Image 1 (cartoon, rainbow, N blue to C red):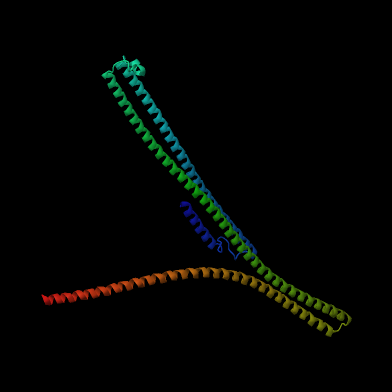
Image 2: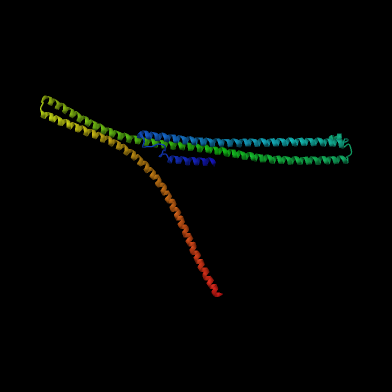
Length: 369
């Protein structure tokens, strides 16, 4: 039972840990690069899960050692009880044999001292019919038979007591064996449950790791797509600016050659205008490049905000489920209170009817009086 309670408590802890998987403390997701943040979150999550699994394994090994110790103590207790009962039985047999031998020797000595003249005839049955009977010998024989009968009764009583003690010892040993078998069965069941719990924990860990890896891959794909789009935009802008610059450079070369060929003021004025136009175009391209960079940074911020909004939505869903459970509990409590109030109102109406009946009876009794 204690092992089952321990496993239930560990399952509750694992469920609470799985609910806190999405919120990993100690990692700020708005600091540093997105890939670095996700890598830090995965490292922290793996460390927490490894520590939790290590704690579960330590607790299970500790409980297994305790069960092994209890089983070994039960086996030692059974062996000690068997040994004690065998020692008691051996001591009882030895003491009973010594007492019987001493009493037999003392009885034989007494008979030899009391009737020395009948010593040969008593042990020789052929000579008993050759001599007349004696009253003293009959008395001694009767006493000896009575003594043997008492000794036999005492021996039978001692044997019965020893049999009872041996039966009780056998019952105790059988109960100890049953307890040992029960403990072994409980240990086997606990081992099976521990193996099942470890397999379940490993499956849950694999599922959580797979989910996190899928989330990381999806996020990496989004980041790669955004980065590729931004790079494509920047590359297009740079290519367009380079083409414009090449065009302007070609135009400037042509204008320079024309200016060298014709040293007129009109050509110089046109070249100055073209140079001014080229500078304005260069400023415009630089402004466009800055706008593209700002758009890229804005896209990154929007991506971080979307990630934060997704986490907030998940937390909001959990809070909403908790609130719904609380609302159901409050509704049930309110229904119970309403039912109790209805019962009280019915009892009050019944009490009022009884009071009116008693009042009517009192009035009738007063009129009769």
